[in-house]
Image 1 (tube, each protein chain N blue to C red):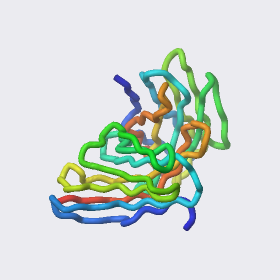
Image 2: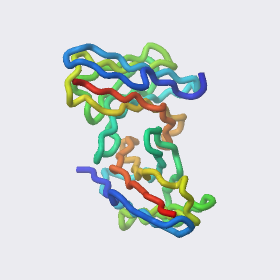
Image 3: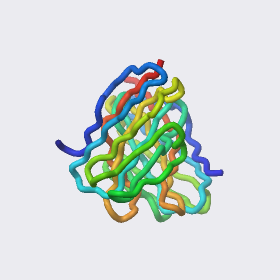
Image 4: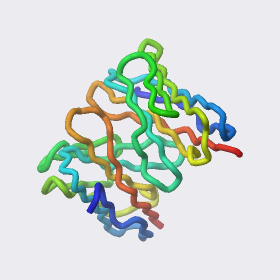
Length: 109
Length: 113
């Protein structure tokens, strides 16, 4: 079966750095996505990795290792507004998105 | 209309009633999707449509039906609602190119009693 694992909840301090991990086992791989979802709102696209390595976009970076079935989302200089759920998703061989359950990130002052 | 509009935003429904959740987009995207989101579970695909006139079943299609008469509209119908269909429903669209990037509506929170 297809499976995506990520921690249920993480807590971090304002101004700090946090890394959210995602491991996956899917039928094929055509890319890995991270979405941000604030409570009561819709998910919004954050990043896309299809090749191994690090993709940096401002305070957010996403890393992919296809051989290990592993990705992480790195958030730097945390702000209170970063409190949200972060969803990991993989595009499988049929170009269908397989979603993790999400990681709720709590930022404390 | 800007982007994706879902209606209603929230609804309480008696079990056994019929309900249609509406989704309208103005981005002219061919691909549209209906997901449900439940606590502790990832987004689960209910039905999808790759282009007007075609639809397909996702991971959890039972109890739901869809239609795609035109590019802009993709309604989701619950023929006879049951309490297990209590959830938040998201409509999404995808631009061309199989990039996997989705644009989501604001969601419809449905409670079936």
